[in-house]
Amino acid sequence: MNVPLLDLNAQYQNILPDIRLEIEKVFSTHAYKLGPQVAEFEKEIEKFCQVEHAVGCASGTDALILALLALGISEGDEVITSPFTFFATAGSIHRVGARPVFVDVDPQTYNIDPNKIEQSITSKTKAIMPVHLFGQCSDMESIMKIASNYNLNVIEDNAQGIGAKFNGKTAGTIGDIGTLSFFPSKNLGAMGDAGMCLTNNKQLADKMFQLRQHGENPQYYHRWVGLNSRLDTIQAAVLLVKLRSLQDWSEKRRQNAQYYYEHLNDTLSMQLPYIDERAESIFNQFTILADRRDELMHYLRKHDIGCAIYYPVPLHLQQCFSYLNHKKGDYPVSENLSDTVLSIPVYPELTTEQLAYVVKIIKKFYG
Ligand SMILES: *Cc1c(COP(=O)(O)O)cnc(C)c1O
Image (cartoon, rainbow, N blue to C red; front, side, top):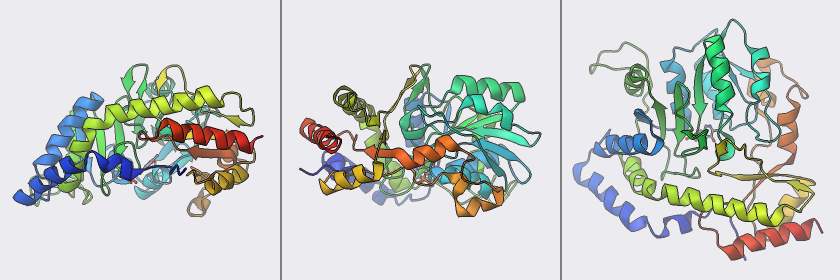
């Protein structure tokens, strides 16, 4: 049996005909730049995420940069974020000239530890950027309290958490701005790159609509220096079709996670992902903490089971951030996660036979 980490072939099998039709529409109008599908998709995301404004852009990374620019964050400013995340989180902060200030994560949720945020706030801090890692929303209740006490903005890096909830609120709509990524392996993936900013603030939305087109308004008049970062019409067409299945896919991911919880809870050599009772995860990844992690990874691969380490190097130890003068030991929880995490298949199209096979091989490994 073969169980890949993600099976795009299975995902597209049923929806490809509809996607072809929607793309054909783009070919018939040649509206490749901000065609009608872009605004239509933005409207659908507003409904899905229960947010007032959605601003499409070229990638999840650009969405973070647009959010930072819209809030006026630049040189001399500090933004607090997690070191245990995909590179783009801190990369975007650096890219606008600001300084990423890392705060270690909670060992159970892998998300930024709200109890450690306050001690990292300085007079230069402008924003907190929590990451809703692997599909679980961060503790937004505590984060919003701190932000309000210190008058800070909150940008939610929600690239991995579309549709996730915290206290019944939709991830990405709780802070000032939330972002989405439609990178092909995200829960809602495009056939290429695409991203989005979410906000309930009309002024910020208007500014981001301009910033994604060189800060232009009206045409050829520029109040700000923005980016060339439009959401591609063809990608919007693809995403419009795929969004119809997203709720169903998220439910199947939750069911697959449930299977692991039921069948792996007696395996003492590994820790299953902990979900805060206030949170509803969409399981972008199912990430375990495993004894003898590297051996387990090779064992699974040898048995044709896809798995991956997200992420092997925490951001404070990346070479490009050496100017921040961090060293090993500065963020022990994140470092320990990097040494022990392993993501195993949880994608919606998994069959019960495949799930049972993954469980069997893991149990066989640990004897
Ligand atoms: C995927 C991802 C991004 C970047 O999204 P792209 O669309 O690939 O630019 C940012 N942050 C996190 C946490 C991600 O997982």
